[in-house]
Image (cartoon, rainbow, N blue to C red; front, side):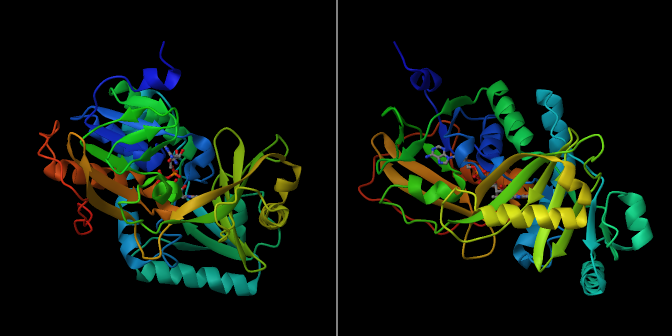
Length: 392
Ligand SMILES: Cc1cc2nc3c(=O)[nH]c(=O)nc-3n(C[C@H](O)[C@H](O)[C@H](O)COP(=O)(O)OP(=O)(O)OC[C@H]3O[C@@H](n4cnc5c(N)ncnc54)[C@H](O)[C@@H]3O)c2cc1C
């Protein structure tokens, strides 16, 4: 009699992907075209994407994003409409990709100068951002505060529901023959993947996409990536008939704190997010909830009438250096060398970047490995090849 986990991972595999958030699930989905893939995932409680707002915002974030990441973000944005359409057609699961655009809202004269400057800088960088006066803003979003002084419209910044995204990616993986294992796993020194029930998976390639948890899954023989958790609290509210959610993503600044309001088609409103270094503590500080609610209501007073459904803290997988990490190592497996590909560090843009990250990670796996690799003799010690450049 096999346990549920054992039944999920019966049979041979070419690639084991450890971590099934947007990056890991999208990578497994691509690799399924020419590999036998097992996707091991510990669940939504360890998934940043379960907390994420899902803004796809290369223009709104371009001034706070490093130039290298901004180029990736623009490329990633270009892939989204086609990727979303393909995933929705394949799975029948709507991703709630909304393209109404983003409004940056200023509450006073100083703040108006800031948003105008943002629009000027964005246009100087070749991006689309249009200043809006108070009347145009309130026409676009009648529920905005009467204190609104003006703002900027960014038509090209969209949003998607990250929970639906992961559900759809997993459904697509299953349809493409990926075996889904719902368990925590870790990589052992011999390249095998050890699951929570003690069972072992072996493959010639292991891809680790476990977000901020990546280093905790690596064996002592491999150098850590240095990825760390940057905590963020988000709230989920539900609009009511008399206090509907806005139609655009709204972003603003209240008392020097950034706040955003991200509406979903089903009447949900995501309000976020703080950004705090406090390790991997998942508890939600009451003061952060207070600030987020107060700031959101200052921009959009109807928030006071909505129903609070969730307050969660999550962890952005963040590196000290700009840009995500894609790196390869080799471990001496019992049946031959095991290639280990690490893909993490997507910070606050991992939903936006996931399809691009998956393409780069899958390309790295395919670069030197045939689909079923021959197994040369095991080496006595792990080698550490240089960092991979992104494939494109
Ligand atoms: C509050 C907040 C708001 C955000 N807003 C946005 C946004 O608006 N736009 C945007 O683009 N990005 C946003 N992000 C960032 C985004 O969520 C992350 O960059 C993205 O989720 C990273 O994807 P990932 O697959 O690498 O990691 P994750 O989403 O963290 O997924 C990692 C997966 O690994 C699994 N795992 C962990 N340990 C193990 C183990 N031992 N064994 C097996 N599996 C394991 C987890 O269960 C999880 O499913 C936000 C993040 C936070 C916290």
